[in-house]
Amino acid sequence: MAKKLNILIFPDPRLRKVAEKVTKFDKCLEKLANDMLDTMYEANGIGLAATQVDKHIRLVVMDLSEERNEPRIFVNPEYEVLDGHNLFEFEEGCLSIPGFNETIARPDKIRLIWQNLSGETLEDTPEGILTVCIQHEIDHLDGKLMVDYVSALKRDRIRSKLLKDFKRN
Ligand code: NI
Image 1 (cartoon, rainbow, N blue to C red):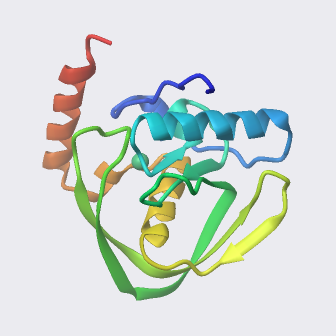
Image 2 (cartoon, helix red, strand yellow):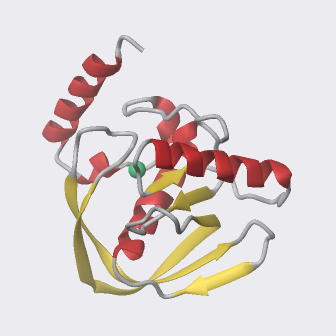
């Protein structure tokens, strides 16, 4: 089992960095993706963006299966909203904001384009939870967080709570 990576916790400023496009599809990329999957499974998450482990490249891992045996890897993922009127509401959580869930409405008709670890381009029009999950993860790559969708008051409360809880680390 690969070594568990350290997950950055909000309001760590490194979570605000914008990730760079992946251009080298090598062993290093594969190793990082596998380390991220191990880290995500250990933390009981369903998705993890490289930004969250302080690696600022456009890489996302995910597993939406009940059995936790369907790892997915998205390199350079991007999406286009096909229908901005149809929103899908889902109670989201985030490994960088432990203990908080927020119901967020996001477009539920998107076209998703990404590359695999070999650099091949893939495309899908996902349904259900993948649709919102990938938008959440792409937000991370752009330095955006779930708390940006809530009121400033609530965001401040979450910030204070997490600063207090994680001060001793
Ligand atoms: Ni997250």
